[in-house]
Image (tube, rainbow, N blue to C red; front, side, top):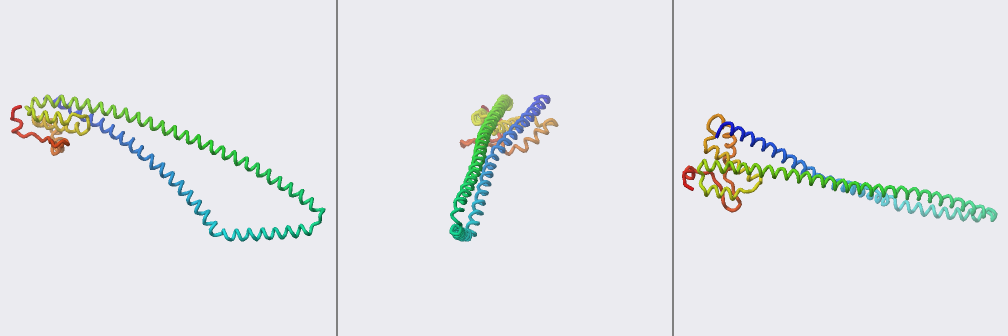
Length: 264
């Protein structure tokens, strides 16, 4: 194989690996952000529940400590009020009785009008708060739906591009492996076993094809000379992983010299 072709093949493989790493990092970033969304929502709910429990506990503590004293003071005040009113009523003359009634009617009317105004303002505040809550809830739901749709579409495009890149790379690898097998006189049994086991487009299949290419390059003498120093270094780290288990009880192993010399 010419030296220029080997350099172009090396550059092409390195560029494709760099693109693959970028795609994997982008997918990992999206997954991390999506997984962190639910814990944040649960933390907000737990914090709100803790505040509600603390408020209820403080209220119950005050009633438990000062409840009896409050009831006792209230009963005494009512008793004193009844005595004072009785004494004043018996002491006052009939001519002031009607004036007291008039004053009571005026005070009660003023209190009732004040309460009605207060209730009106409270009702407006409650209505405004409820309308705001519904608007915020609707906005949050729409925003979550939009974010989910955008994430799904982006993920679909990324997966589609990554799948197309893997398939194209695997197609080129297999065409090159087929040609190198012919040059290296690889046995037909080994070819058939490899071709049937590793026919997918996953990362494992791509790695196995790369290992097979490195092994064929070494067997054909590509590692000889200064030009193959880098490939020899890369292959030395992958040589122990050439044998892969297919899951069906069939394993691929590096070919021996006897396998190379055997006929198809």
